[in-house]
Structure formats: C-alpha cells, structure tokens
Image (tube, rainbow, N blue to C red; front, side, top):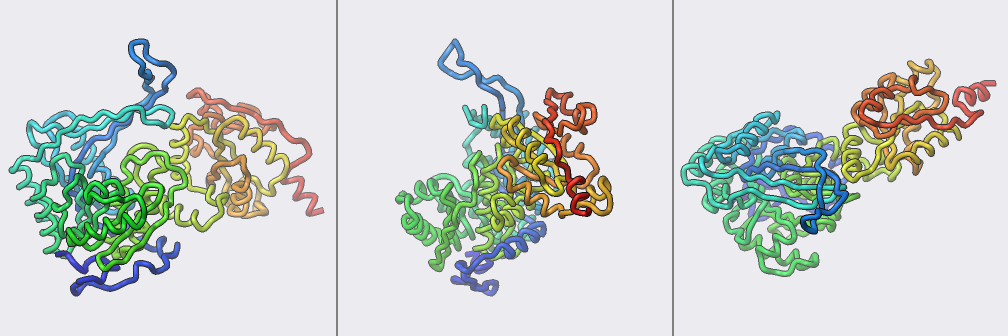
Length: 511
C-alpha cells in the first residue's frame, strides 16, 4: 500500500507521515500561501482524452417539421476534455503536466493531438490506435442553457499493445513527477489491470495517486491515495443510501475499508464536499459557489487542484479546502472551464470582504464574468473615470449607465494615471478608497482599475455592448467610440448634472 505519503494523514503510516488534525482551523492566509506554491507541482495524468465542442446560438422558433426548437448557430468553440481538461486546469494553476492517453487515427484524434501540443507546460504522450474512434462530445446551448449533447465514442478497452506501451511510458515518468492522477471516463484507457499496474508503480516510487473514478466496481482503484467520487457515484459504487451526511460518511468509510485507500473526497454539488480519512476523521466542507452556471468539467478541476496542492506539500485537509474553493469558482463559469491561480486568490480574499468589495477585480476575472453574463444573453455596459470625491454628477452618470444595460463595468483610473491627467496633487482619495466607494453602489456590477491614461485597452478586451460617457463629451471625443461602433455597439452620452465637479469641490475646500 501507498501509505503515509499524504500530508495530514497519520494512519498505518511509514517514515513519510506527519499526523495533522484535519479539523484544524484553515485561515485565508494559509490558503493564499498554498496557492502561491502550486506552480511547483509536476503531475502525471493518465486517462481518457476527449474533445469537448460547444455550439452557441439563439432559439427564436420551433421547427415546423417536429416539436423541437430551432437553434440559430452564432459561434462554436472546442477544447480538451476528460484527462485533457485535468491537464488544462493544472497548467492554469501554474503547474506542469505530463499527459498520457490513447486517441484514434481519425480527424478528432488529429485535432486532439494538435491541441495538446499547443498547450504550454504540457508534455504529451499520445498513442494512436488505428481503427479506434476518438471521443467527441458536442453540447448545444442557448441563453446559457444546454439544449442537447451528442456523444461520439467507444467504450471498448484499448488494445493489449497500446496498454503495454502506455504502461512502459508511465513507468519511466512516474519517478519524475510529484503526484499521479488517474482520470477515468470509462472510455477504455484505464483497464483494471492498467489501474493496478499504475498504482503499484506509484506506490513503489512513494508518489500519491489521486483517482477520479467511474463505473460501479472500484476494486480496480485499490491502493490509491485519494478517490474523488461525487455523491451519486459513491451511492452507485456502494449500493448504499447517500442522501444525508451520515449516510455519505457510512458509505464512504465502508468503501475505504474495502479498497484500503487513505482518503475519500466526496463532492456533493451545492452542499460542498465531505473528506473522509482512513483513521475515521470526517470533515464536511460547505459549498463555496456564489452562482452555479455550468458544472461541466467541475470534477476535473477538483482533481487537478487537489493533486496540485498535494504535490506542493499541502496538508490533505487544506488541499481539499482549495479543491472545494476551485469547484465553487469553476461552476460559475461557462463550458468546460478552468481555474487560474488568480481566481483562487481572488476567491479567498473575496471571502474576507464584503460583497461590495468583492466587485473589485482584475481585468482577467472581469472578462470571465462578462463571458458568463453574455452567454446568458445580458448586455454589457462600460463607463470610466477618476471618480475622485464622488458627487451627484457621478451618481447620475452611473444611474443612467445602468439603465441602458444589464451589467455595468466601471473602469477606474489608478492613482498614477490620475496624477498624469490631473496633476501631482490628485487624486484626493487613493484608488483603493475610490474603488470601494464605487463598488458599494448597487448600479455597478464590477470595478476594474487601469493604469494607462485611457481605457482603450480595457474597452477592446471587454467589447461592451454600450459605451457611456458624460454629456460634456462629444461622440467623437469618447475614447473607444469608433471601436465600439465598428462591431455594432452603441455609444451614449449621459445627461450632465450641472453644478457638480470634483475640481470645483476641491477649489471650495482650498478657499
């Protein structure tokens, strides 16, 4: 058995163990420190690789041929799925990944090979098996809702030759990695013999094994370090009731005893997660999701984050807390999404902030929220300014801006930017203070601070549906107006509240 290599476990352990109470208080500073170390991880991922396609459009009518909606296709995207999505999540967290899998000698297989090769920090080892169809899943969505999914796949086992070659490559790579991940989607790569051989290889090299399981028979994962079933999968594998926390605990403990594994991390959707260890310790982690938008690939994110944290020497309980945090972030994104280290840092800090302060985000985080809102059919508005000493004129501008869009993003000049524009004695308030005041307003959905003299880079990245400025401007004088109009966006000038200006207020104070 691979015992004692997981930080935080002290049961039937060897020389590597250090017994740490998984129920200890986990502080935000602990999590921030762990997130900053994730880039040190080197993970070997073995499992089923697939292509995830997403077709987006609008439904405005029903087909006259049958009672089905007609989807007017607007755009399509494709990304790595299955074990490929685990690798994508690893590199988005800053880690390095080695990916082992089998694809078919077909167009989808060639597309997968090309896409994996284009991912930085992923070392691909893909075996091509002639006559084997590569797995492809296509999801059709409208207004943020999934209408239909089509699967092209095989569930037959890979050939003996492919299995032999795959195992030989894994045996060479395992000693060089920190953690082995088995991502099982029941598409034929991870046979029972393959799983046991890989776990035995990792055990011999004192490397933890994290398994994302599939199917009803988990004996093929015997000896793994951590298995991460969801609640439904746990119930199917044990045949036990898993509706309540006590039922989940009983089923999980029975499964751990049967498989002789160190720990079980059960994902429970909106109810969070349950961590069980072989020494009988139990930790129920509450959900961290603020808004569930799409659960596609959430399990891959959990496995990747957990493996990445364990590889960085993080205690099992804290690694599980990070995985739970990552799950809450990724389900609020559209499609088979990934989580970045910056997302986790923001989520940790947002947990300590008021809901208004959590609106203050970097541009990368804002773009992901905007993509989610746009997929849901919501219009995006943008306005900007220094907003130094907020006055009724500002409030009027923001109120008018919000009335012309579903979501309003405000670009805020940084302190350095304000000094270049207004003089060395400005701003009166720091960028942090100005951002917090803006974020407290119900009319504003996000605040992003920019350091340039103009917000043109932000406008080009956001591509707002509506660009709003004060009525003291002309359309020709609005930064980004030509760009927004070039793709059909609107540029609006708000009515100006006479008698209010920051400069005028400062002059009065000086007098």
